[in-house]
Amino acid sequence: MRSMAWCVGVVGLGGCLGGGASVKGEIDGDVPDLRGGYFVQDDELYEGGDGLIIVALSNVDTPCETDELVSEELEDADDPGDAEDIWETYMPEDFWVLELRMRVGDPDDDLSKKTLEGVSWDEDLTEDDETYGTFIHYTDFLDQEYFSGQANDLTDYRDAWFSDGGDLDISKHKPGETLSGIFVTEAAQTDDGDNDGDVEVRFSVERCKAMERYYFE
Image (cartoon, rainbow, N blue to C red):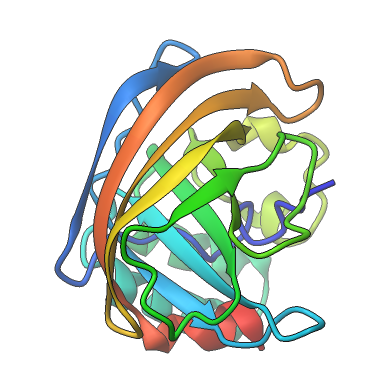
């Protein structure tokens, strides 16, 4: 079963350094508002040497910088009340996020024109050239209860869907610098896999090295 650990926390909230994103289709009746993003990579995350590229898309302004700032300040927060204030200062109340994970043999190889296979909604990445996405729709500010770990129902803050199958076609890739592609998939409810829509996500993003320690260290 795939994890949503990063998606329901701090990481994956940003937009782009200089790229963009767009969406065709709907999830649960809404068109996900994804306008830009960035990517991070770990060259040898998996046993056997496979690497991982994560594309983070949303509609938050200056995403790489915003994500780094929020992550740093949350690390230094004295208590859940401080964390709540930080979140409300920098983050919008209502926004969408897509975190797209790509398992590849070597992220520093040119992946241009490669197609990655989307796994089933209840599967993790077990081989190279596989991918999946997690869609998050934040509907309220994260508060003290959330940051203290006492929130019993995360749907008070956001709704989430896993991608189910589909394909990711990488159109352009300048290793370690830029990445463009088209991800076509179904959106499945995270508890039972029921289909809530079909989407096509196009993106063109730059690498955000500043966020890699928050994802991988």
